[in-house]
Image 1 (cartoon, rainbow, N blue to C red):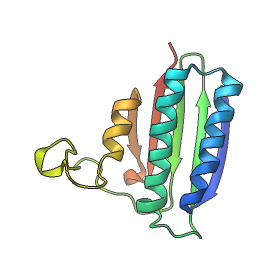
Image 2: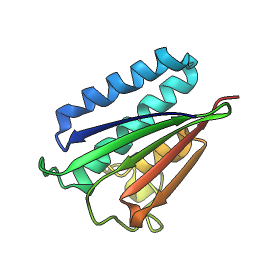
Image 3: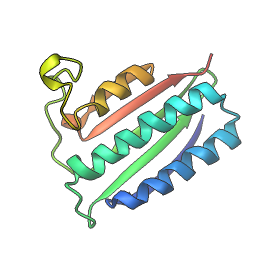
Image 4: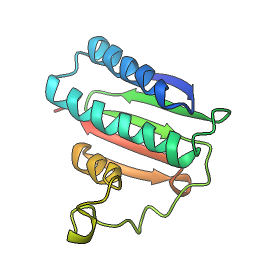
Length: 133
């Protein structure tokens, strides 16, 4: 199994480093364009949530991203240093009362783009799995 890890301070502009990390993985592991697009959106959204909500934008706190690849799937694990959140009780962003709201779509997007989304450590860790075949 191939594993690569990056850790970034909680600054919004560090999303660029995450995008480069994903671009490098695309090249290294020859990811197809459709899975690459899903990964780019879901993983950057997850890291963005970790920066903004998990670590409250505190630049002295870090977000780590780990990629693990085997023959059948690619998994991204995002960890922040926050206390977590109640991921089992999220408002539905497609409900009429939420359509106009800014935000609240990140986890919805992740769940639709990744094949599996698993929250751990009270929500301070999210695992996004994408099937390769």
